[in-house]
Structure formats: structure tokens, C-alpha cells
Length: 228
Ligand SMILES: C[S@@+](CC[C@H](N)C(=O)[O-])C[C@H]1O[C@@H](n2cnc3c(N)ncnc32)[C@H](O)[C@@H]1O
Image 1 (cartoon, rainbow, N blue to C red):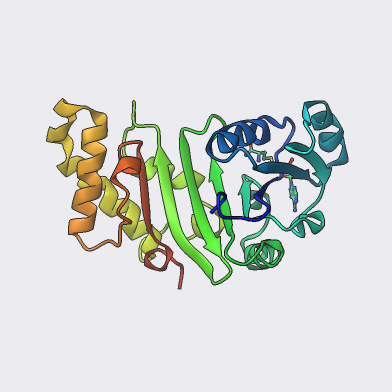
Image 2: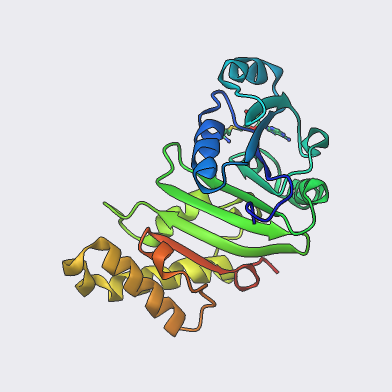
């Protein structure tokens, strides 16, 4: 998507007290597409001022901005650990405001993670709404997949209760993880891959991305976990 874009602009929204995620995002994306420009946006003016010394215009810039994206028209927005500060009923309008600013065909990646990124989850959205949910765990020392529950995106975290689809997914993953225990002797990645295979066998719409499974990721269609 970045390679095809006339102006491959990416926004890291709400980068926080330090712009480390924006800097790393720029470095990693530039390795894929050297023309990528990354813009870090923050509501807090002191955080914008603190980030400015790290700017490398035009490739890496920082500015004050919120969900309207300060007039920018990016192809991709990353918003991590931002919506968790909001009420759940503020999520749809925040999504819509960001998606309205993104160019047609672009994506919003909105999620939550722990402080060092070992438990992450994110929803990928396009102009038609949420498409997928991705769960991502550092596999070493992973007790069970459902420990990612405390880092679910705002749209799902309050729905992780019996009777809701997201709870069903996490419970089924735990039982597949248990069933996959014999694969532990081939390494924890093999156990996760087997967990994902079993999950799919039980009818969950898992996206076919085996290279990502090996990293401790799983992507399912959002419709399979969406709250009623
Ligand atoms: C917990 S920090 C997240 C930092 C970083 N994204 C991360 O994942 O480590 C949340 C940041 O979001 C910013 N923020 C909250 N609402 C925002 C909005 N509507 N637009 C831009 N930034 C926002 C806050 O000022 C705060 O710095």
C-alpha cells in the first residue's frame, strides 16, 4: 500500500511523552519504502515540543493534532494506547473522524499494548469499518493466550465476558493452547502455530498468514468478535 501511494504519509497519533514509537516506525517503514514520510501527532503541546529535536523534515515531523489529523491526508494511521483513555461510546466517532481524514484505500490501525509491547492487540479498519482483529504475544513465558485480554482495544475490552464473541475466542484459544502442549517440545512457536491451526479447525475465520503466526500473531475477521 505504501509503495503504491502517490504520497506515502503515515501518522502516529498520540505518541506520548517520548516519540520513540514514531521514530522506530519511521525507521522500519523507510526500510520498506524509502519515500515514506511519518508525522507524529499529539494533543499535548509540551509533548510536541519535547519531540521536535528528533524531527528530520520532511521524513519525520511532529505537530499538534487530534483525531482530525491536523489536516493531513495519510494512507496509514497508527493510534496505540490512545482510545483506552476514552469511554467506549467515544470509539465510533473517533474511528470515523480518523477514517474521514485517511485517503481512500488507506488503513487505520487502532490498538493497545503493555508498556514494552509483549501483549498487543489491534483492530485494522478501512473506510468500510473494522476488518480484522490481531492479537500478538511474546511467546517466551506465555502462560496462556487469554492473558492478552487486559490489553484488548477499547471497542472490545468491556465485552470480554461469557456470552460475548471475544470471550469465546479467547477461551477457545486457551483450550487450543492446552491441546497444543505436546508441540512445546518443538519450541514455543510450534505450539502457537498448532494453536492457530486448531482454532481454524474449530471454525474460527483465521487469516492465512503463517509467517506471522510464527511471531506469536493471530488475525481473525472482526465480524467474528464484534460485540452485538
Ligand atoms: C498512553 S499515551 C500513548 C503513547 C504511545 N502511543 C504508546 O503507545 O506508547 C497516550 C497519548 O495520547 C495522547 N492523546 C489522547 N487523546 C488524543 C487525541 N485525540 N489525539 C492525539 N493525541 C491524543 C495523550 O496526550 C497521550 O500522550
